[in-house]
Image: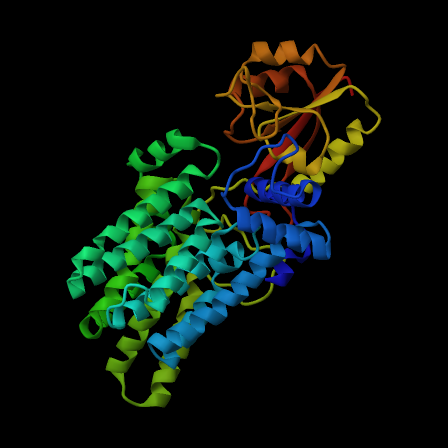
Length: 469
């Protein structure tokens, strides 16, 4: 994983956001943008952890991503010991293999994003909740307290951490019913209120955002269906076997793991966003546990000789390597688009370095971009405009720049500046397609940056146009 961040590849859109907020901690003492905007408690711990890494090691892509690498390594160790504790050494070995060499794990462990942290938290919560289920009734059981604490921590890494809080609430309800302690149902509203407060305090959306989160439902699972059937059918099949074999001897653990997986996927698809598979990542460590349980259960049925069982484990690992979803040699880049192409991966560092060179001697120059956090990160202090098709005539509250959405607005703004740069993304993006065509036909073409080194098969490009340069 360290090699995967050693080349200091560009930050992508969401990573730039975290890096800017972390830089805000160093510059202003708290995570805000230069315009003074705060996201509330949304990702707040991730901002501070990144700021700490920046403070100790200096500001760079490497240091920004370093905490995620450490979390990914911690996830491997945690997964091994939890699997060994709940199942067996052979199960733990398979889980450790999956967490260590899976392409999807390596990719998200090398990103300045919160999802590898959420995987770690969900795995820990599942272990604590199982211990809570097994223990005698006690309202403030230590494992329940651990579960609530870690779930609240996960909420401060990302808003989707609220799923962990929901799982804790469901298990608490189960234990109330199991021990017939119905008077304690009164505790559940506290968990619900806490969840609503987390949503309310995230992203500055207020009660409108809360209403959207609660009542918005999506019905377009195609993206996830392709993601799972084309890439992880082997994992689903193995985890399903593991669920049924585990259910025969430990119903509570099977339902906890399997039910949590189904719950996370259901919420990710129908409530959060059906286009982005990253929201389902916290379910993967739990699926690895069930998959390993399925493999070991089948092997135990085949033979009783321990040496043959280990030989079959090795054979299973060898067969898994044929799926194309595992990486066994360190690479300079692990693609987050290896399963579904949903994140624009462009060499922004190279592109903005060239832009900086173009405008370095210009005093009255404006930069126009189709995203709001790239210019503040790569060209801090540079005046720019956000070309957003649905935001015409508005001001972006996050960074304070103008938003243009029509050709008429673009032309009027262009007349105000002697020179300017326009960044056009070579895919369907947030910029009005009419403005894209206008720019291509009427402005001077400067250069195109196509593909990222070590990721040439994942084609993304941006083209830069200018006037007065």
